[in-house]
Image (cartoon, rainbow, N blue to C red):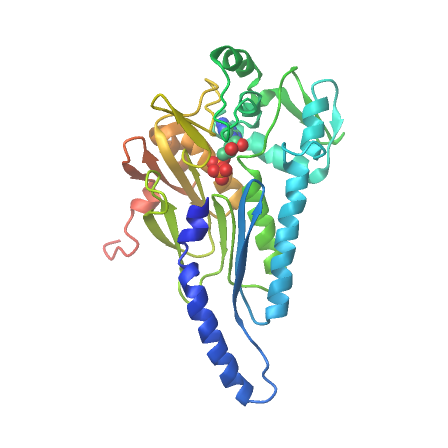
Length: 346
Ligand code: ADP
Ligand code: MG
């Protein structure tokens, strides 16, 4: 989470660039008429149970700051819609009512749920928003986990096919009592996509929006690629791999985000839908591609699928690449990343 924003080289360059900006401004002030104060600006705020960061280049500080505020407002709006931790959110209402009868659902939530179900089909159920019937029984802060009996019975309620959307009627219904949905594996990617959309509409051409482990890069760092770090899953604050990227989304799912260790077992927040237990075999899964909604859902999916099945899935998606770190700390790259970037023999 903090990993991505913290390890983006942007941190250091902010100072550098603002100094540069000042110099530039002083220079520009010599010529009358040019009052531009173009510079990088950014902020990080707690939102959605994690941190949301916006970092952008703007020709005018006022426009830049305004655009930045709009992104944070949008993140708060989406959280009010999609958070299961808020009793009055639309998703909480659905979870209360949809097992009784079809519930009217807003267009935006409809779309995100539809995309979630599509990813479930694509990943043969590794990604499944109904994981929450088990997931709701975890409280990582108080180190609480469901007992074996609860897992056993709630597991029966995990199956994305219990969720039925009716486009014509604009409704959602759950086909079984006890089914619950949670968009924790996709909503941050959605926030990031919406944030970048807003910035683009405002004319911003270079920016990063990050929510937890999900980032989207707009353009580059003005002539250089952004450097994005993938956290070392077992060394807090350390970067395991740095990637030069521009105009891409990147998401990492890790077993170090929300977890507690008990008797040598790590209980974390990514659930294997087949067993109802935290998925094993992987410490972190990163997915890179054009759309943050997809990279977010796919990073959770690759985590659940494991190294082999995860990379096999990614190999079928030409626009998406992946880096997986397994339980032994070994690093695996999808085919597209293994190819040398400059191969003169081709
Ligand atoms: P983060 O950015 O919070 O690390 P991830 O993209 O790794 O998020 O998604 C983890 C979240 O996804 C969990 O906190 C939970 O809300 C949700 N989740 C857990 N298991 C699954 C699953 N099998 N399918 C879909 N969502 C899941
Ligand atoms: Mg994810």
